[in-house]
Structures are given as C-alpha cells and as structure tokens.
Image 1: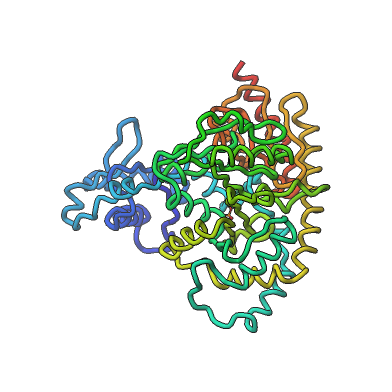
Image 2: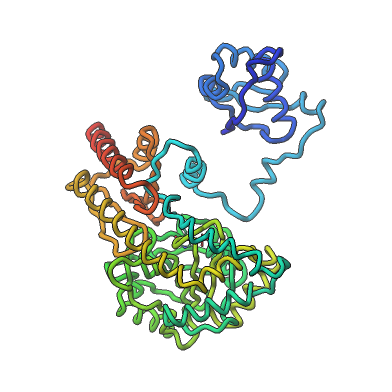
Length: 483
Ligand code: PMP
C-alpha cells in the first residue's frame, strides 16, 4: 500500500486538486509507485493530505481519465499507467526487480513495528532497546571529548577490525567471562546481526539446518532462511533448551542459542544444562552459536559462565554486542571463534563493508578501557531491575488470572502468555488504536501462540503501567465479544 509524506501547499496559486494530480503523476513517473500498487482509500488520502474528500475525488477522476490510475478490483484505486507512461518514457519494472533478490522481506508485523517505532504517540511495550533516558550522556560525552587526541586517522582497518579494540575485548572476555580468546580469535562486526549474516552466507550450505530454542529471536529474522537454510525449533524448559530433542544433528547444521536472559522468554540456561549442551555438541560435532547479547544485564546474581568459557575444543562461536548495554547506534558487535572461522568471516566482511565504523571502534576501545563503563553497568542493572519490578507489579494488578509470565533475572523481557485464545492480530491492531505498540509472540515462534514479548527496558514505568492496564481491558473486552 502506498503511503504519503506530502501535503499540498494551501497558499499556492495552483488549485489543490491540481497539486495532488501533479504529485501523484510525478511519483508514478519517477518509478516510486509501481504499476499495480494500491492507493489508500479516498478518506485516508483526504486525511493524509489535509483536504476535503471531494478534492481527492476530483483529482482521482482526472488521473483516471488520463489512464494513470484505474479503479481496483474489490474497491479503491491503483496505478495503471500504461499508455500514458509510454509517452513519458517507461520506468523499469521495479516491482519485478525488487521481488527478485534472494533476501526475504521482513515479516509484515515487523515492518509495521519498524515503521511505527519512529512515529510519535505510541507507548512501545516490546522494544528491545534501552530507553533514551537511560543513555549515559555524560559518560559518552567524556569519551567523545577525548576522540580528537585518540584517533590517529580514519582510514580503512584490517579484516578483524581495530587491533586496540580486539586487545581490550580479549582482556575483558578473559577477566569477565572466563573466555580465553586472543585478538586473532575476535572479529569486530557492525552489530551482532552482521555476525549472524556473515555466518549464514559463508559457513553453511544451502539446505543446512539451524536449531534454535522455540521461541527465539532468530525466528523473527529472515537471515538464515534467505540463505536457503531451515530453522528448526527445539522446546525450552526452565533450564534452557531441551537439546536431547534434536534427533538428527548432522555435520551441516548449527545450534543457535541465547543461553542468558533469552530473547524473548527471559530464560537463563542452568550451569548443568550448559555443560550438557556442550557435551552434546562435541559428541555430534554440532557447532554452537552462542548469542550473548544480554549476558551483562543480570540483576541480583551473575549468571553461569558462557558456554564458550568451557569450550576447550573450539566447538563454540560466541557473539557479543554493545547494543543492549549501551548504544545500538554504534553498531559494534564481536564474534569469537577458532582462528580459521574468524578469518573466513573477516574476509567476507571485507568484501561486504570493508569494516565497521572506525569512529565507533575507537569509542568502544576508550569506553571499555575506562573503568567508567563498569560503573555505568552497575547503575544500569539497578535501573533495569527497578523497571522489571514495576512491570511485574503492573502484571500482578492487571493480568492476574488472565495470563502467566516469568520473573526475569536480567535482560529486557517478560514473556506474557495469555490464557485465552484471542486473535493476536486483533490484539495488535486494537492496541495500536489505543496508542500501544506491542511485539506479538507469534513472530518469535514456530507455531501460533498467544504470547506477547514485553520489554521493561524502553517505555517509561508509568506509561508501561498505563499500557498494561489498557491492554488488559482490550483483551478482556475482545475476548467477551468472541464468546
Ligand atoms: N541477538 C539478540 C538475541 C538480540 O536480541 C539482538 C537485538 N534485538 C541482536 C542479536 C542484534 O543486535 P545488534 O545487531 O544490534 O548487535
């Protein structure tokens, strides 16, 4: 569906309907709106343009009379543009092109979320990001001030990234996580998403399987599927993935896991389970991809050590990121693995983007070298814990008897499982109408569910409280209608 980000100029000499005709004609001539695409209803267009519906009707009639638009089957209008566009020099058939690349489109619900997150007026109760007010302005400003002296140049860097950053990460991985990794085992990436992308395109054959927890963050992405792989869900219990349910672990597959503060369920894999998973991986020569995006965000007690920390045979590839602890906009992540793997990924990275931003890498180096980062993390954990408590008590107040949920010991997420089988599409759209943007659990799962991924990291606590109260009414009301 076409969307508008333009309004006619009411002070112009040119009649408003003519301006609309010109705007639509130019959009089609430029190839922005392809043949066959549908325009919104006349009422929605009138609202978007800020004009009377009759003005839109006049403009539509004119465009239809030119043969630029036609009435669409099932109501509405769509772009026709045949004879007319021949006169104007025909644009390429972009529609055909944009559907031809191998990379799959995002799930429609995610496209909607990605767009609405940047529109004001919504309370975002599922966003996997720290609230803007938690951004450590002072700390970052201090680091930025040092940058002119610190940065010697901003040229390209080598395949593994900034050596200074590799060294500080190596020290910290040993000190904080018990992971022994030389700088030659560490690749700096543009966020951990890039780590996933690189692994999908250069380490696995088409047709390979990627086992994941069910549900999982990975299911909300199309990275592995676009590279011709199949994602296979493995159930979770309170201690983590039930790896023994993987029946056909073959050499051309991989186990992707988020053992600590799992996205979306908040689960922390027990120490015992980590050991067993690693043993299983060794026995079956099934590599593990350990995604530790949330590992530093524990509240009361440090979680068990990373699976990678016990990996003496090079079976585990480990990924970290600064996105959840501080600033996703830096786009800095790291992949830790056997040298041959890291070099291969680095080689493909050089052909993809020639390195993550050097500015971000220098900032990260300074940040990790300063003790300030650890102090900041202490504060952040306290703040997140308070937000978690607020979310839990709101759930107690509004969802008791209606849903079940976990009490996360860190990270961002509460997995809210509704007891009633309400349509999640309906809940999503009704919540939107009320000004609440939520992440339906379906997009993380392999089958229909009636869950919502809540995040207490983003919305302000009072707003989250309001949103949960409103959401409980919506579900209650809708459920009664259904019965
Ligand atoms: N892994 C997990 C588990 C995540 O939740 C996210 C962000 N939602 C990412 C990776 C990607 O993070 P980034 O690319 O910003 O490092």
